[in-house]
Amino acid sequence: MIKDLFNSIVNDLNSIPYFSEFKYRKRDSRFIRKTIEGSDVISLQFWDGYDLKRDCRSLVIKPLYLKRFDILHRWFEVYSFKSISDQRDNYSIGFDGGMLDGTLQFYFRLDGVDFDSDFCFLRDEVIIKSKEVFENYNSLDKLYDFQIRPILEEQKELPNTGADWVFEYLKLCSIVCPEKYDELKSKILNQVEIMNNRGEPNIVEYYKDLSKILIDIETKIS
Image (cartoon, rainbow, N blue to C red; front, side, top):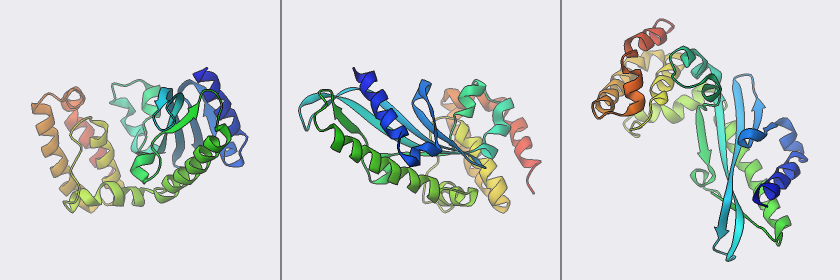
């Protein structure tokens, strides 16, 4: 019942002009729109849950709004331990609704009560929030201002888990603001050492090839 209800909602979304710009990928419930730079993605996570407000079992949908710039990811494929398909699904920036001061999760009663109003609520907000992300971060310059500049200005801390961000941040800086690359590199390598020393598995996986990866980035800095 949950899957059937979710599929019905996807079909209804597909009938809306805005979603006709996207191709729906069923295997991971993603609406994907190819762009010159990469792709815009609306990912719909869903599960069997409970609506506390209406006190009933419900389908729960959590949208994610993702944007990818291929130039930040494709070069790294020769180093990644992930499969090509997983790498191609990496995104450069992403938000859930709560991060955008919107709705984190949407609820649909299994008995169909309130379906029309619930659907309109989901539809309208997903369109608004996805446009907000896709338009506000539609260039590498804007991505740099959001991800890198606050780090250099000591307004934002570096991530403390994972590894892909290390190489994406350095690549982004090398393209947009190469004069700041060495400063960012110093901050990031300090963090990499801390993470490697504590055994962060993703960093450990790449640590032996770190010098080679950095050379790859730095030989292409203009």
